[in-house]
Length: 330
Image 1 (tube, rainbow, N blue to C red):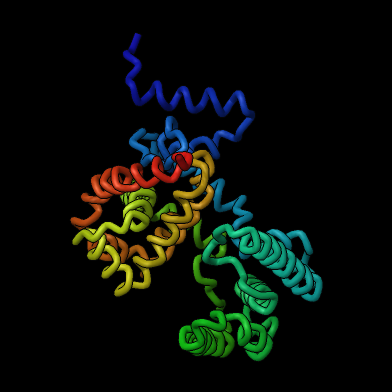
Image 2: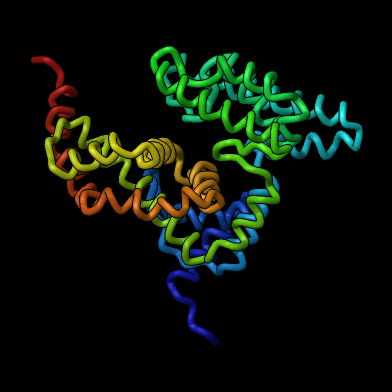
């Protein structure tokens, strides 16, 4: 009988737990691929080696079932609408508007409760409408709705009252892309989105070692988020923290990765894969992101190596204050 390794035992335990909860195997694989199965309340980067075939199958399943992506939702609605062009256009818009309206209302409720919302959540009704129009145009082509219609919907969508410059720049860039797509008869590409068939093809072409490396880096960033929050709360002044903040300020992609990692770290570890996997797929299926990824995250070195030590320092500094605050007055 072959020897059962510790790694195999961990995977077997996770699979057994999932079976008891009647969870799909693909979800279990993606969870174990994302976070350590024995993680408690805090995110812990995984070290369990999974077979390539199982991980790829789970990623392909996710792309096909992805309801966190507006384009995937619109694609399914269009497919169900049949061959009539008008019905397909109506179905695309209805599905996209419903999707973003739900996200807007959920985000608004979360904001009112003092919670954190996802970076891609609509910040207004106009933003939700513009994103919906753009998602529908991604699937059916900008010519189906006309560049003017798409741009008019997007005009009020970008940015927020506090970042007018970014809003104007983003709109100008998208206007150029949309006009070019209409003239060439081509299709738009929604940031972080993309058609399912394109994602599947690019995922299949991505080396497995690359998938694992990107996963590992994102997991390390998520694991580092809590110590970074504690260090900031404790008011630590350290060169490693200063370096991370300098890189964050200088590189928009790194800022996005760090913000996403912070969001992931605040979720229960069992659900962390629902945020990390879409980010991993977005990076690995977008050539320009993947090409720049290693250079982007390497800029954080060697500061990331100091994060956990800083977290322990922060806990030590915060603990006396917490105990003092909890003491009853004499």
